[in-house]
Image (cartoon, rainbow, N blue to C red):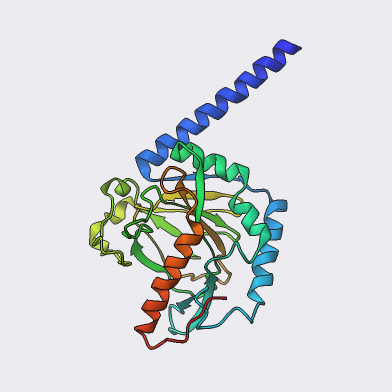
Length: 270
């Protein structure tokens, strides 16, 4: 019996090692990985409840609140609320999920070392919401981590119809594809081969992780349902350690300056 338990433990350990190697190899090759059914329906339930509770926070949802994200309707152009950035300080259940041991284990397997939470947001993408043009998540600020990875955790089905994330495997090897001036740049579609595009169609409970250098985009949500997703971003421990709050201060300052250029000087963060 003891020998059977020992063999079972060794088999489980070997499976875990192989899984970690597979994740790292695929991520290194393609710039992204998808893990299916990581989160159970029972674990998703409080996250869904939180997304609905926070949507009712009319004290937070304001055009001048830098925490709030807005997106135009794909047909009418109407500007509508699209998400909270950041989110973990508003929701203990979401904060716990961002640091869940399974999530951190997958990130360690990919990065080869422990990961630190760098950024977090909740995107609602209601029906009709426009998508995002081709871009990289990496921003060429002097202290921005090059190990930056984004983790997508859908709360609703992410399909082509609802505007799921679309990635271009292997292009992360080329590093920053835009001008390295510390600003956000949309990339021209001519810089990718559309025949290589992969739509990250995910069910609630799945996750996807992709490199900050991987070009990606999303189309409009043309379904009749939300496409809520949690976005957690991380950096390797050796790449600056825990810099979430420092980055948040820099990012909010950057946003405030940008908004002031569009006659919105009354911005605040709450």
